Image 1 (tube, each protein chain N blue to C red):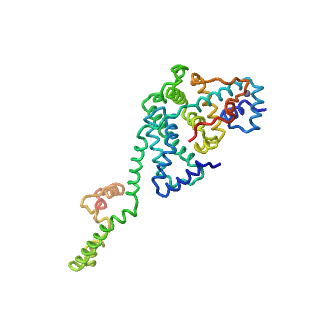
Image 2: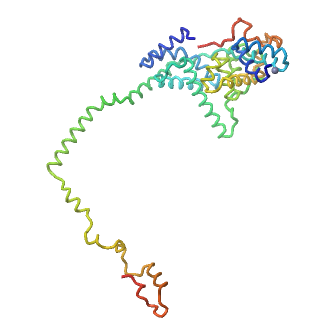
Image 3: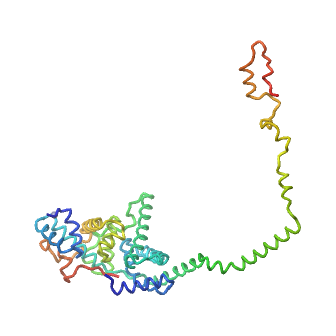
Length: 214
Length: 168
Ligand SMILES: [Zn+2]
């Protein structure tokens, strides 16, 4: 269902495709925070995150006239950014393999025992702990769970964006969370028990868990 | 009855709050009866909650300006590739080249008329040479390898000095 933000995006995209640089700049302002955080959470590196965010917007700028509106601009922009970031990660992986280093050599150490519960009070430390835990996952699991839980994309959107069946998205997200569970232990706030049959996603607000959307 | 494998997809969706009512009822039923899946379902919800609470990183200072500079460069490249722009800029050059070419052609035509018959004649093969067999181009006084072989094979033992051993 289209919301006000989507309508504004559509107008901005039309204007940008017609040559309005101001309109494209406004799209950048609206999405730069999300795309930067996507790159940051997938690479765990501020420098790479900025470069990749810039590259994603430059690609989007070049291709804006090809955007047909079959999806929302948000999904399209995430798709462009995800491709840029995954290409970068694949290159890093190849480079690691070539030089005989570990595949995730650039990934920081997972925070299983490195971060205590007291440490994660601060936002920066908490964010780093999450990003480091994500870095310990294989790329395909990391991308799927990040798009869902941190960026709030729907299962169908993720399936389209990654060009994989929706069942594969569900499976990847399940496995990603399962592997993250011990890594994120210091960040856990247990408000549920197994007898609640996993209602955590709905309990607090009565609404589904929603990530901070763009 | 839902299998544990089927339940995984529903547990993942439920933790995201993205499960249809019918599926939700089926999953609740499964979790009541399956002690193995209950902790997994809890874990899904806990991890989803932890990730959803990830504090956002601020976009680095100066990011917008740096991106803007890159986009400006893109605009310039787009101009470079724009054929209409080149048409306009190169029009005077093209006009000058056309005038120069026209002037040169006029001068050549007036001063040095080209005689095509003369050129054709210079390329023609000498009629006398054309009459000779192709092998005559390789004519040699010595015995050729073929002729020598033929002479050896056909030689009369009583007349070893056969004429056949020599080419004309
Ligand atoms: Zn089960």
